[in-house]
Image: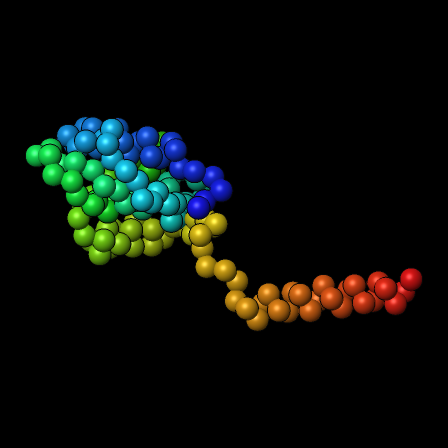
Length: 130
């Protein structure tokens, strides 16, 4: 679970769902995640997954992408296909930097080990110099 929620983005997605005649009030979000950002942060790319009622009343799982430019607004794409959503994300985030989200991959184990060994060495030196 992320430390900071994407409540503003979720509200923006719900407004878009209303504009598209989806059942936005009953929509349940499985994911709203920042995946890329262009410095200084004007352009942000989000992925999301939710369940909503279509205009004809059936419940569907929707996979979406949002390219939000704080200066001009957002552009949405939604599909029932995760693969199609991932293609859009690749197009939109290709030249942007990673989001540095708390859900990014952890550092390699060798790096963690190296850092711990460095800290241990500093503690030993400090104790020997007492």
